[in-house]
Length: 383
Image (tube, rainbow, N blue to C red; front, side, top):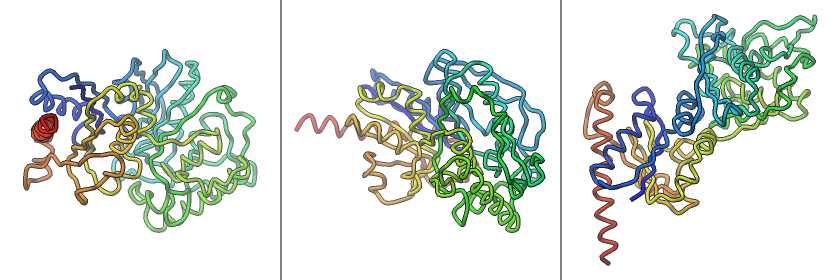
């Protein structure tokens, strides 16, 4: 029996590698001689670098950058393909977890630190950048990132704008004359798992601004600023970024990297699967196990289990989802190639207890589920 284990993390509870190892222990209780291949997954947010480096040969380095408020910090990113490809998480330099709750302020928070990570990668000669944009603290449309790479954003007096999302309301001109010339030889792919546009009621500011510290008035200011930014950058790029699906990801960074650098937005799980050479590994499998912290109707919109299942389906390999919790009908995600979804929960419990016992409950759940799966397979053979 050859089994591929390709789960996402259980957010706030277990890292993807921890989930995969617990699943492996459960598998080994049922299929003693099984061949198990683990592919810890991520969707472009926190854990993307570790997931890819766990799957393929590479290295992680730390460099000096700035946090969302411009303070000096150390941030890490990864190299794969003998240094030809950099794997960068914006959360490492511009993430919400870098700020205390009372520090969150998307009016002034900036993606400059992420731009400095990219600049360091260029200094090391990369030819491709995989950029994960989940978990941002910012709402600046990628303006800070662009300025770190030589772009000048100017007001009506020709002065450079201060950092932060609110300042974009005063953007009049975009000066690309000083942009780092090495970018023209580098392909940038962005892990983007949301479809939100840049502005409006479903845009970056309205949907994600409050969790970054924006009140109702701030949201209106930020949305107007991104509207102006989007219009100006669309003129420069020759495409309507205001209608770009995913343009509102990471506080408008989705639109920014497309407009400034011609980047390509892609599903994050798909990028990780490709980086891990998952197709070659899954096509020889008899079964694939995946999972996430919570599986529900939102999972269908580009989450890891669906990304894994899409690949497995193309090779006619069955997929089981085993998650922290599952909400929805019995046939949830069947149309996406997932045979069934299971929860690790063993009964009523507190959140603290669930987190504490997550690994052992996951291991037991996998053992129980595969015991039934094995019995079904044996019965089918006898028929």
